[in-house]
Image (cartoon, rainbow, N blue to C red):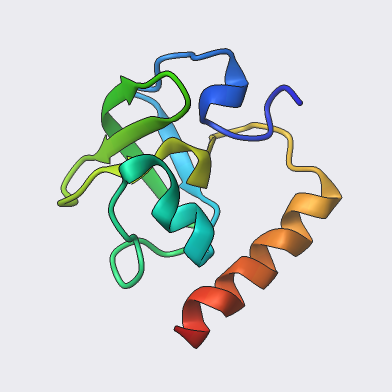
Length: 101
């Protein structure tokens, strides 16, 4: 699915210097990929500037300008990317999971 996420599924494009939107995260997504927990640091729906992007074999991590930590690139989408209807409802459910923690 082209344009759905900013991670490895997007053809390994480099996101350094791009503006991305944080989609939110559930516990499994936080644990996968060796990234840091964005809970209490990033807010779903907010836009962030990618300072660096490290591509791995199965996952990508990005750093955000002005924010401490490395985050799974799958948790973001590039500004202007198409958001399928199932993803918008899924993001709401992920936000509830993070809030319940």
